[in-house]
Length: 318
Image 1 (cartoon, helix red, strand yellow):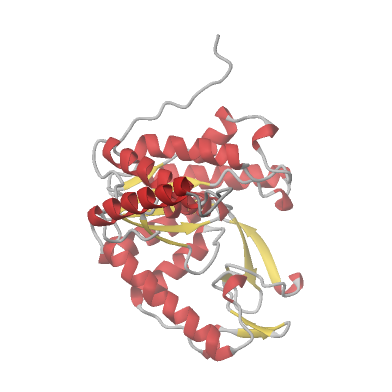
Image 2 (cartoon, rainbow, N blue to C red):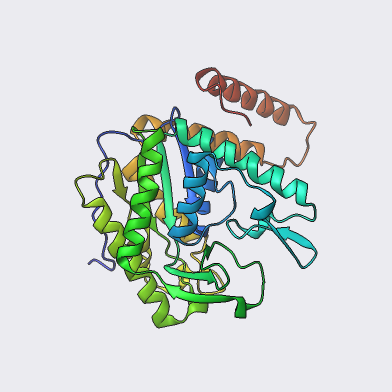
């Protein structure tokens, strides 16, 4: 008896992620779930250098700025609620000092450019098709930074607009790194603050646009991973949601991560990940008697495991 429908997934035969890969992750909250897994397993990765980006236009703006090396200037920031902000980035970049926010923005811009130049994979997760435009400039913002709503107008990006934005993103990446593989996914997180029907409209626009892109023969090296569908079809029960009933809980995140591994990780890489996991669990172990002979021996064995992996992968640091 089958009590669950499963989405058929096929392991890729080429361009798999391994410990030589360099992965850039950009987008909504869900990409951070994947990014945290990659960080835990000691992959080489850069995760949301400007904070969470919810919609494709925000990702387009930052990738284009990084590729074109268009630095942030004083006109790029504004003062509100005793802090300096930038409409192009998440509020985690906000700062009480104008000089510091500009320094941090340009430092991250340079880091993003360098990572995009050498990235083997770029993972982009789209969260919503709803955007806010500043009325005075008609510019789409990544974050409103609690500026009063009357200063913005809310719009739903069309499928054509999202497709065009994604094409711009891919073109910018490929212009400096033609071999980079781009993995697109739609976040399973529900944006209910937009409304139930509005959330569904938003996700449908994102999904249609992504498939219009990846089915285009001109978009070689672009791939879709069905995280949204896995959540909706395989995990269609509220027990897989966090207390807010909007975000996937730890069980769901682990489940989708396992599916991601099935598609994008080689068997050799999975073996190394198991070794890393063993070390990570050992490091988090809290002994009853830290000075006991058995624990000291355990620590010695742990150091041997770490040294063995570091000898194979110089970037690893525990």
